[in-house]
Length: 158
Image (cartoon, rainbow, N blue to C red; front, side):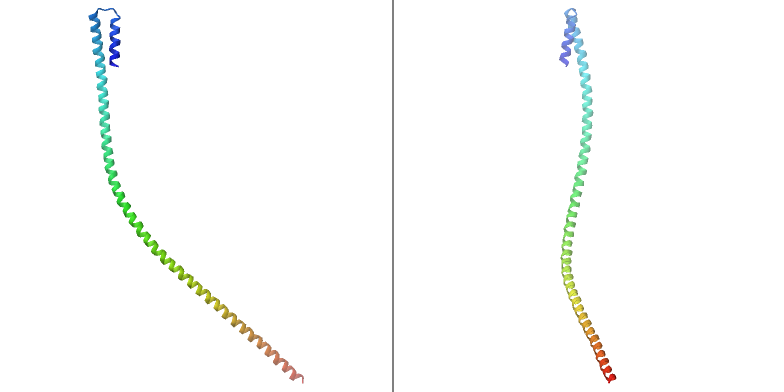
């Protein structure tokens, strides 16, 4: 960029037809102006780069602080994770203990239900036997009354 502007300045001063000294002075003056512009641009870019560098350093410090906080948080989370893992293992042991106890109770319940059904069947059989006995006695009573009534009728008719 700089060299292109210098060449353009030299060509423009030579084409005017001035004597060589004047054209060289003009070219040098133009070069000096171009160099000052370039130096000014360089200083501006240097300041922008310095501002970018400061911003990057600030961001780096923030990231470093976040990393440290993240490391602390990760340590806390690891500790919490261990506690939760221990709690889970404890709950699993308790679950299996309760499950075994529940299975025992289910077996006991099945046995009790079976015994209760057997007792109900026995009671029904007993009630049926008593009912038949009562019906038999009732029939016997009726038969006895009928026989007594017939016999009484016979005696009265004679």
